[in-house]
Image 1 (cartoon, one colour):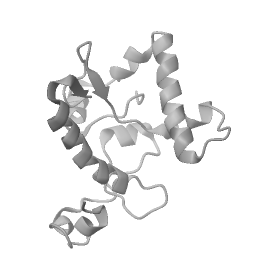
Image 2 (cartoon, one colour):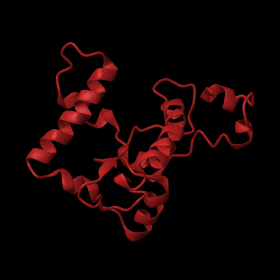
Image 3 (cartoon, helix red, strand yellow):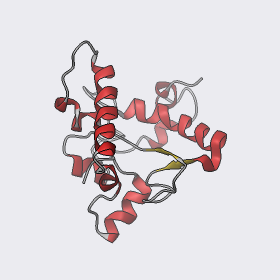
Length: 152
């Protein structure tokens, strides 16, 4: 297993040569407001290490289950019935909507996302969030960069 820091520091691979601009943000991060860049490492609340550590797992899923999974929006903005759908979420969008109770912050983030999705599905509104209000040019960019479910 290779640690993200090993790649960034040049111990494994040549990550130093392609570290990205920590000030750059994807369109969805700009639209979400406070979301941090996937290239902003080593600051409070950074998600860059988690993002980069998770990318190989997405590749593993793609290779393992192939056509049974739909990576939204990369595989398209709509998806066929009967497939599992993998989406990017930003728990801060919903975490204040639910009491934390006995959950730690990570557990509460997971709970908040799952409960928000469950409620939206029950009231028939979940599909709305898979169609964010984007211009055709923005949709083309987001198809490459990705999009956070629930960011409209």
